[in-house]
Length: 353
Image (tube, rainbow, N blue to C red; front, side):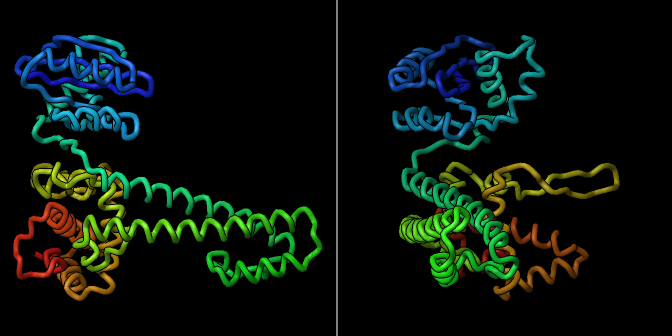
């Protein structure tokens, strides 16, 4: 079998074919990051070996188009995290750094980790649509926060600390009241700037609300079971779908938990047996599951009982939450792969098994 490591860039993609049995470099190729270049790369790869797997460095938007092209033509594609290449470069006999060297490091990192253990890429257009809308909404929310900060300083200069209460710029009622007050004021440059900022905040609020409704429709059609999970609202469910990008690419819930940075890492030595927090993985996915765990710890009785039991065992509240997050990772993976172990049990109760 041939493992084809790929180092993607905005203008070019470089591939290196490594023999899976010996780890020997057989061939390399560099093409433009275009449809014609992808076609040439596919023809080159098919001429190498009938049994092959493409190991692509996971660079999100840079590697996404090539990945979708290969998967759409029936090729097997796995994603290699960039951090895995560091060890491959250090152990290489060839010094230096170049695109062919990096592509070879990608292939050898895939061999070292085991091709079967790496996430398999797949086409999921609905999940991609959810991710694009969610990312766009988050960009608008960040812009809204920046405008609110600038507006609040202008208002403080105009009227002092009593201009708008904390959190008032998030509410349509206060924006309307503020707009009327600014309209009655002397139309200085600062007041005109404030009126523009108030109008912009109204527009951003409407856009965010519209996007949230659109995301809710897509999530309800794509993964309605997630919305039934206690503590998982529309935006959190959308984040789970978007960042997972196909739960079927993880063969077990343990691999999914590792990808989310939830699975604990052994840190034992001699008689000292312990585990430490995993600070890697997909932090966006980790944050979404953390929100569910915190919410369940407040409002979902079985989760509260589970946390109390873990704390009675000597764990801190944070450590108990980590245990709950690991159980939730199993639940979410089962929901998203439609593999419910007990059809008679509600999905929420699986977090406590």
